[in-house]
Image (cartoon, rainbow, N blue to C red; front, side):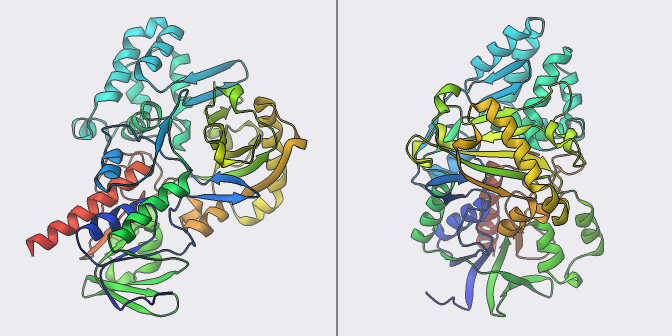
Amino acid sequence: MRKLESQYDVIIVGAGIGGLVCGCYLAKAGMKVLIVEQHDKVGGYCTSFNREGFTFEAGAVEDLSEGSFFREIIEELNININITRLSPNLLIYTPNDKIRLGIMIDEIINYFQERFPKERASTEKFFRFIEKYSIASVYYKYKDKTFDQLLDEYFRDEDLRKILNMVLSQIGAVHSRVSALSAITYFRSFVLGGGYYPEGGLQRFSEAFATKFKEFGGEVKLSTSVRKIVVNRGKATGIVLSNGEEISADFVISNADAMQTFVKLIDHKNIRKDSLSLIEKLVPSVSVFIVYLGIKKKIGEKFENCHEIWDTKNCDDDPFNRFASGSNFNEATIYCYAPSFRDASMAPLNCESISLCVFTPSFERTFWESKREVFTKMMIERISKTLSFSETDIIVKETAIPQTLHRYTLNIGGAFKGWAPILGQVDISTMPAKTEIENLFLAGHWVTTGAGESGVPQAAYSGRKVSQLILRSIKKA
């Protein structure tokens, strides 16, 4: 394996989508760029893994629509990946109902108008607003408002509001605390921008960025941990690897967990006390408990090939709040992802790859040691009734707890979406890409862009933004 050099123009810590996108733009501009990743593959949460021929996804990609900034990034970098889109995007099963969301805005509007005719005009107004808004136009109006306050401007029907709260639940926070900006971005990217899928799965998607990065002359070092970001006289000057090797750089970009970056990787003497205090008070997003199942039965066609199906016990209560303290686990909403419903290559012939997720606080490992099998059994019993398979159809079964997610991503507590999308944590100034340390930048889903929601598109956006900041600073110098 090629030995690392001692000096680079830019070193990026972490090969998530934010780091990969940033690296591509900088390497394309002719800079000498190194990406260091502690995992043995690139992608962060945008990865896949294989078990006995079944491919399981670690996350999801939203809003790859034509004209979106994420699609612009893919086109600007000439990323070689095929993207498909199918409808419906989402099926939600409640004890007495099935909520079906398609992918076309007129289809979505008509669906809600037929169910709630008294809210016909408000439904049109709400979704057209989601479709056409720009962050610049809504930022100051909604940055200090909750999603509930946003709904107050449009709807009175409580049943309609409950369904919209249910759809929002995947954002991973109780709707009464969710920032209106986060909700607006979520509805744009997940509902109106949903249904997209990179053919071959998320690992192929991330590898396409890594391949392009290398074509531009960039270098990726996998299975290598960073012990320290070196700061001299208020300026980032390189990194120290876990083996003690020091590598210098003109710029350092951390695509890692922001808490880890400031609390563990940087000597505290280089950070203002008020800044460190603020960081330590911020609330990370929830984590997830995941059950991965390989099913020897073909069932996707029964669900219109929709690869995302939710099972909720009750639409009348907040599905996330039911498990906020670890109790009433069987009441929690199960988010089911089945990529093989859309892409047959993700599972063996006549089989399905399915992931079952429940949002959860991190909890200690001892909690999961005592509850892991019980929760797994509960989830399988519930979802097997919804998806029509039996215990004997399962040929692969694995689970992941928050500590598992932490091991592979180093996100604090196995956080799944950066900072929690709640009031007080979505302001542009909360965690900007440009840090107080000269030539140290942040990229990834821990950067607050003002959009609120911190999914893959926002991580990609942050990567492009950092590359622009660095290239601009070089041009001025």
